[in-house]
Amino acid sequence: MGKPLFYEIWEKPATSCIIGICSAIWFYIQKKNIGYSHVGLSYETAIEGHYWRIITSAFSHISAIHLVFNMSALWSLGVVEQLDHMGLGVGYYLQYTLVMVVLSGVLVLAMYHLLIQRFNIEYFRRVTAVGYSCVVFGWMTILSVKQPSSKLELFGFLSLPISFAPFESLIFTSIIVPQASFIGHLSGIVVGYAIAWGLIHGMNSYWALSLMGWIALVFVWSLKKSGAVDLNFLEIESVTDPSLPVRFLASGNGRTLQMTALPNGNVDIV
Image (cartoon, rainbow, N blue to C red; front, side, top):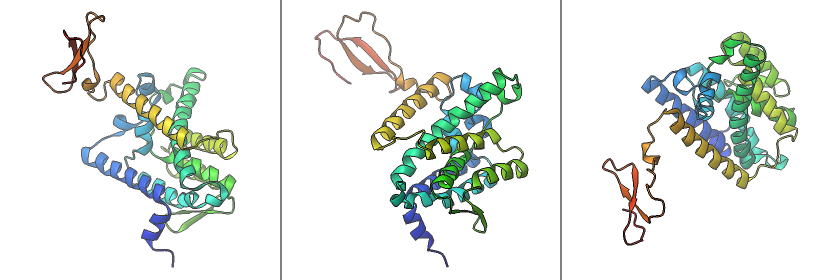
C-alpha cells in the first residue's frame, strides 16, 4: 500500500497548494460560466495589452478532463519537492514554477508572432490557450534530465519512463486531444530544458520575490490599461498648480483620490 494521502500532501506542500488553487479556480469558472475568451491567452489579446492573461491562462481550466490530466501529472511531478539532496526541493520548485509560468507564456506569444508575421499563418492570431500544461511539461523535462530513472504516474495506474515522458506526452495529447496546444506544450519543454541545462539559473528567494513584485505590477497595470477590470481607485487627478502644497481627499465614492491646494502647507490624508 502507498502512503496515506495526508502524509503525501505534507511531503508536497507547494504542489498540493497549486492543485488546490487550480481546482478552486476551475470551480469558480464553472459557477460563473466563464469561457476561454475571458481568461485565455491569445496573440490578438496580447497585442491589445492583456498581459495579465499570461497568469490567468496558466491557472485556468475550462474542462474537467483537462484539469484532472494536468493535476494528476503535477501530483506525480511533485517529487521534485523531496529532492533537496539533488539541489532541488520546495524552494527550487516554487522559484522555477514562477519562471516557467512567465517564460512559457512569453514563448508561446513569440511563437505565435513568428508563425503569423513570418509565415502568414493567421490561424494563430486568435488561438486561445488555457491550462497549466506548460508548467507540467516543463517539470517533466527538468525531471527527465535531473532524475531520468524516475517514473511519471498518471491517473494512478498509467506509468511512463520520465526520460521520454515530455515527448511521449506531447505526441499522446496531440493525437488523443487534437485541440490541445502543441505550441504551449512545446514551449514548456523548451523552458524546462533551458532550466535543467543551466541556461536559466541563479534563482533564489530575493529574485523570486522581485519577479513576483514585477508580475503583480504588470498584472495590475495591464488590467487597468485593457479595461478588463474597473480600477478607478488607482486614478489620481493632477494638480493645476504643481507649486502649491497639497493634501489628499477621498471622493464621494470612497475610491478616487483628489489632490487639492492646502493653505497652511501641511499634508493631511483624510
